[in-house]
Length: 274
Image 1: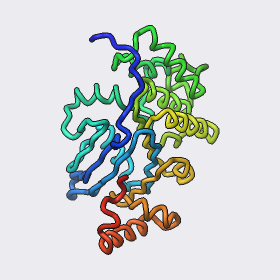
Image 2: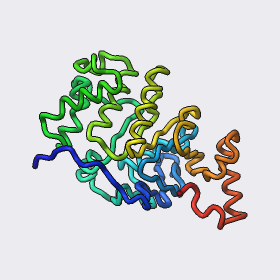
Image 3: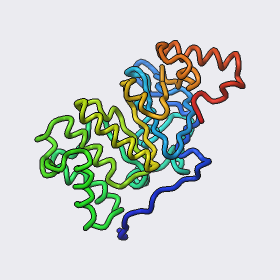
């Protein structure tokens, strides 16, 4: 593989959405029939936005995130990230694209148990070959230091706490300096101090024009993001409704949005797009 070095700062046309979901649907087939998990999701995310996705368990939050990462594919509609259509990209090409463009923080860490925390953070750099070999270990150490784990660099994941594993997973997600970070409940296993450090790090990254989509069940964390997308029963609540009636149950917000679209179709042409 040809040598590659640190990439220049990612820049995107300010007038275009960096992430575009158009009429995205996801249906799972089960023994009892088909289950619609996403129902016509339509949303744009711009470069430099910090966006949360909020909803009850089973509402479709993680499935929506998986559409953007390419871990799962929609049953209908289109997903486009930085001008790349993900729908039918073969997995071999998807893995390369993902390594160059996305950082992913999984809810349950998914660190390699036989590798040290340092080696786990270096792994994406080794796979994508975006940094010269001599740069990789110093960069990995720097990222571990940013999440407070510099003293644990040579520990195996099983030898540290769940919160420390999650912090290492966040450092790993940043290894290749991706323009987009997708985080699924990134603070769910952290104590309050570590969670605050993660949120401060995310805010710092957004200030550097990174785009972050954070799945969370925590309304307090969601309020710290620039936009909050509420998903209920596989549909996005119109942002106008969630901002106007923030204390309503999500299902009631969704019904209001549906009624508003029926009564004033021109007022809400796209459920939650920019």
